[in-house]
Length: 383
Image (cartoon, rainbow, N blue to C red; front, side):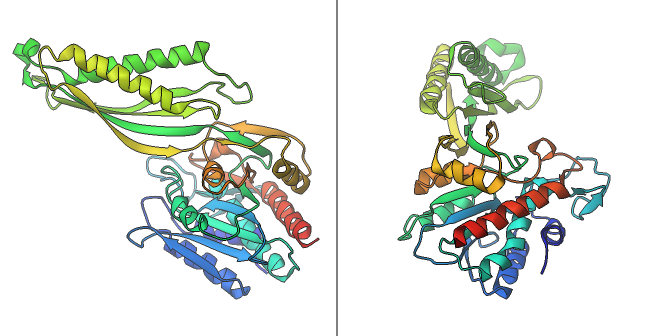
């Protein structure tokens, strides 16, 4: 029977970067499960180039435990790797390859335990939910959740296998991402005052966003269990202008809000849009059509599972641990909670600190710990 390390070697070899298709990887997973007598359902994206995979092992009429993982990885261009990022390399017990930690290691462990689960007298089912396009905003799993909303039986628990060093994580921040376009009035730069500089407009609004961030950091909600204890606002990209001697009539910038679960994120968005209107109004004496347009880029909800909940106690029983944590990066857990009312806990092999970097790796010890957790899951759901 193929073990988790062997599955990981196969999975790493699929260069399933978010911009590309994941169908070869999904076909490998589906074929492996079919060989164990387990059928799968595929939920494709609009153009059919990508797919989520959903499967149920055990009774279909009982609320089950979802093992959730994403199949896509981030690009490797511009990174200096010491080995081929799409070929698994074992160095002293560390397994190097793109996606080894984030999060093909967890999927490999799921595939390795599938054979045991298929033979076990499960009284509660195990579901696999393997998604596409998580890395660009938890996009793909939404189509799968739309399907599951109409299912007669909803899952009892979702374990998201993002890398947490096998610690149970109960909460993470949510995210909203926007692209803002400032519309000004072009002019020859020698006559700059008769134009409206869109870069200046954008800069003024960015200054207002920074002021809101300062206020939140000094006076807003705080949760010391996060590495950054408060809601953060961040401008990550800006582009405007053509040449130096033209007053630019257009400038765009992208910003995000990573908000605490208790935060009213929509109130922050409303403040920023009110600031945009105030900035634009200041330029309308020269150009009446000065304005800002906002376009949604990304969003996923925060996740917040009570530390004393049955879901967390159950995961602790699987891992043998008793600690909990909170993370600043996002997962699909909040979507399972919001769409299905299914409590979620994040727990998986590897360290997020090495994800998205050159020479990403997961250790054999972490894979073994995940294998043990999933073996206990099968035992508990059979008892």
